[in-house]
Amino acid sequence: MMDVTGTPAEDVPPEGARTYRMPVARLALTPGVSHGPLDGAWWPRCDMLELELPALVGSLDPGLGTVTRVTVDAVAWPDAPRTITTPGHLIEVTLSAVDTEAHAIALDCGTVGRWELLVIPPGRSAAAATWLLATAADPRNALTAAHMLALAETGFEGHDGG
Image 1 (cartoon, rainbow, N blue to C red):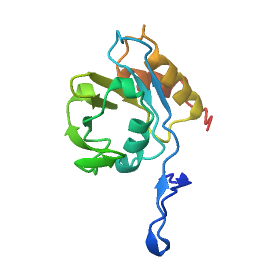
Image 2 (tube, rainbow, N blue to C red):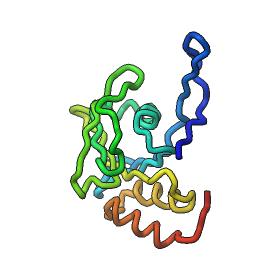
Image 3 (cartoon, rainbow, N blue to C red):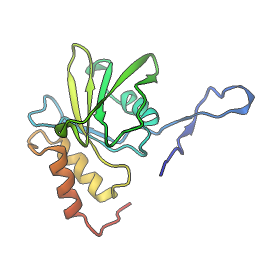
């Protein structure tokens, strides 16, 4: 299921073709320096990385650096393109089958650093997603992405919340 109900772009292409911008990313980052396995969480609206990644990158503080490469789970994003254009630059997309990177996205910002974010599945309930966003961004959190998703599933089972 895809949600592309973003705001129409201001630069409408010729011949009536329409393009859309995704709404602002649903994102929570660990304040300061992270001390856990995660640096926050991201809750995309759909499973199309080429639509979601520009919104994610655009919502990051410029002080975090320019995202040059992302590493995503090959199972979660099997059809991800190998490059994605965002305003001002091109981002390389690397697929990983490493278990520790399942349910996560790593944002590489050159010499500035690397951020590891939990990826909350788009269809997750609002209640579960709210908990996951807050917990992943908590500097005291020591849980992995897979463990957090499992806890959220059992803790919010039967609640549709959104």
